Image (cartoon, rainbow, N blue to C red):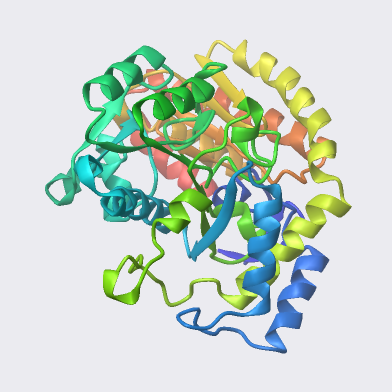
Length: 416
């Protein structure tokens, strides 16, 4: 039970401190209780906590939109707010679908999407439809629309799909550089840029989901920057407010925006909106977070930490218990290989780490490290060391019989 926090530490109801090794689910950027973000939210409370953006707006929403356009890849100059990563992707899918309907003629047939195998874009029905993880999405298959799935990192596979389905594909949807929930799967250099070229060649929009990769996680403000790619639609959430409040944004090009303009009788409007869209408190937190990026030179100070983390992870990858380590910036997946699912080896590592004062989470038997990017070098080293110790401590369970496994479960839970 987490009752308080300070910097990169979470504090439970017993007063015990834990290093937040997963940024409170990949969203905290500058640490907890950053004085500038705290002050911005308190200041906004003295004005208004919430007002609808249906027919109205407020200064914070306008200012934040302008700031996002300044830092986004070139050409993205329109902002549509929502309130989570799932809804940011949902908006992008609807926009892409409706865009081609407005274009008319043969483009009306562009009603399907290409995504990647093992993709995860959220839990709303549209975002699940372009997901590719049977464990998460299989239950809801009867509710989903069909999407065509390409092998991650295989440019020939996505080229074949686009060539074969050029007339029907509205957009390609992907996380750039890293597929987070797939276990931090990293794409080969040049893959994103090649996908952009293929989309242009075959007349498909490119939707980049930077909910997890955005705001410094891969070492640049947005992962797209590393390959000089500007998508047609960019989805943001998680770190947008520094990890303080729910807020999402879908950025679009002017070409897409203009397709929704027309006489009232044409009904070209995107009929999509959320109650807390552009919430003033969340916008205040987001503006403060972006100011901190500039004032504290967050991305510049991040680079040596990325290099050190890579060096330390080399030792982890050399452990006999570890199959592979995948890293991009401060996004890390430590793959323990395939084991009997009943052993829940990744879960055991998490419990061992918790005993040692570190919070991490597994994706199956992949241990994910994704700390706040403001983490100190000392705490970053501690995170790696504790996870390595925890892997060694948990690994012998693979040799236990069922009875021993049950006893270890109980012992670990009691210790945690």
